[in-house]
Image 1 (cartoon, rainbow over the protein chains, first blue to last red):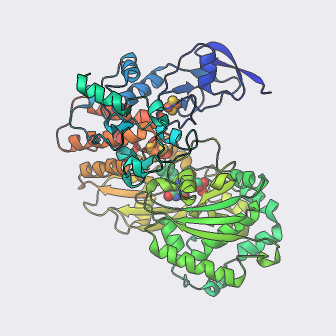
Image 2: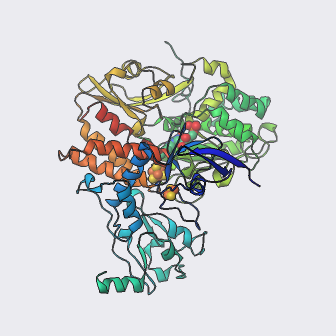
Image 3: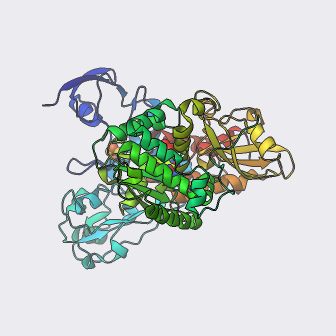
Length: 217
Length: 406
Ligand SMILES: Cc1cc2nc3c(=O)[nH]c(=O)nc-3n(C[C@H](O)[C@H](O)[C@H](O)COP(=O)(O)O)c2cc1C
Ligand code: SF4
Ligand code: FES
C-alpha cells in the first residue's frame, strides 16, 4: 500500500500515490504533458526532455516522465521557462531530423510556435543512407530522433535479442548493430517490436516502405 | 601571507617510486592515525571539516562519507582521477609526484566507510600517473597496506586501477561507473545518487583526487586546522592550475579564496604577452570568463557562485589584450560538441548548434538573431540536460558575449 500525497499542478490541487511520477499525477488530473521518448511498455530513458516541468524551488526543470512526486510540491507544466525549453528542443530536432513521418511531433512544433528556420541553413547535418538489408523492415535513420525505444524493446524491456545498440557519440550518435553488421548477421529475430515502438517512421515494415515508394505517398 | 604548501609538500622532494621515501616524509601516518581513531571518528572529523568536493560540484565530502559509512555493504570507494577539464592538471601533478598519497587516501576512505574495494579511475592520457600508481599499488600490497588485515586492524581492502579511454564525459561520476562496469559512458539519471546506488548498483563514495588527499591532512591535523584556512564558508588548501598568458604558469597551492589578482601577480609573476590583463577563464571550459572588474574576486566556491561564475576544478587560464578571442570561443564550442555523449536531446543537439552558430559568427557570417539563439540554446541546455556537461556547456560562451570579448 502506497500512501497518497497532495501537491499542486498548474494551480490545481492534486492527490497522487506517493510513488507516482509527475506525468502520472498530471494525467490522472486531466493535465497533458507532451512526451516523446516515453512509452508505457518501456523503461523511460528520459532523453528527449520534452516533458520537463517547472518545480518551484528546484534548480533545473524536471523530466515529468521519471520524476517522482513529493508532498506539497508546486509544479507548473506550462511556463515561459518550460515553453522556451520545449520550443528550442523541438526547433533543434527539426533542423536535424526528417520529421515528415512524425505528425505528432509536427503538431507539437505548431503548438509551441517553433520556428526551426531561425537557426539558418548552414548547419551540421546527420547524413544516413536508407538501410534495406532484410525482407522484413527498413531503417531510415534520417528520420531517427534517438528516442532509444527500439534499443530498449530489442533489449531487456521486450525481446532480449540485443541486436540494437549505439554507434558514434554526441550529435553523431546513431542507432546501430554491432559493427554496423547487416541485420541478418546479428542476433535479430525479426520480432518487429522495434518497428512497433518507433515514433517517427525511421523503422518501417518493408512492404509499407515499398508501397509508399511506388505510390509517391 | 606566508603559506606552507600541504597538498603538494612532498612533490619534487621525494622519489615518487619509493615507498620508504614516502614513509620517511609522513606517509601512511594518516592511515595509522585513522586505525587508532576507528571509522566512526574519522567520518566525524570529515563532517567537522567543511571540505567541499574539489572535483567541481562543491558537494560537502562529510555528507557522502557519512552516507556510505552507514550504508549496507558491499560498497565501494572510487577516486575520480579522470581530470579532463581543459586547463586542469592538479590531479596529474599529485599523482605523478606523490602517488602513494592517493593510495593512502583511498585506503583511508575505504576504512572509514567499511568499503570492500576501491577503484582509481585514471584519465587515459595520463600514462605516467598510471604507471606510478600501478607501481605504488604493488608496493603497498607487498608492505601490507593493502590486502588482508591492514595495519593489524582486521580490515581487508583492495584497489583496482582503471584507465579511461579519452572521453570527458567519463569524469561525470555516473558515466564513470558505467565505464568501470564495461558499458558506454552514458550518465545515469539521478536519483538514485552514488551513495545510494553507485558502482555495480552498490553504495559508493566517489571523490576527486584532491578531495581525497585533503582527507589525509584533516585526519592528521584536525578539522579546526582545516577550517581556519581561507574563508569559513569554503575553507582549506586549494590547488589552482594556472595557465595561459602568465609569466610563470604552473600548479599553485594557496589558501582557498586568494583573489584572481593575487594568483596572477604573486604566483604567476604577472601577465605575459602584451602584459595587460584582458580576461581569465575560471573553472575550465565549463566555467566562465572573468574580466578586469573581477580581479579582486576571491577564488572560492561561494564568492564565484555569487557572481554567476563557478570555481569548478580551480583552473585559471589567463588571456592578455593581444589575444584574438574568436578562435578561443570556437575551441570551447568545438570541445563541447565533440564531448557531448549524445544521450539527452538538449546537449546532443544544443552543443552542435552552438558550435555551428559560433562558427558562422567567427567567420563573419553571423545572422541577426544569432545571439538570441545562443541564449535560448544555453538556457535550454542548463535547464533540461541530464548532466553537468550540457548544463554548463554554454557558460563560457555566454559569459564571453556578456563581456563583449568578440
Ligand atoms: C562532464 C563532467 C566531467 C567531470 N569530470 C570530472 C573529473 O574529471 N574529475 C572529477 O573529480 N570530477 C569530475 N566531474 C564531477 C564528478 O561528477 C563528481 O562531482 C566528483 O567526482 C565528485 O567528487 P568531489 O565531491 O570530491 O568533488 C565531472 C562532472 C561532469 C558533469
Ligand atoms: S548533458 Fe550531454 S553529456 Fe550529459 S547526458 Fe546529456 S548529452 Fe550526455
Ligand atoms: S518523455 Fe520524459 S524525457 Fe522524453
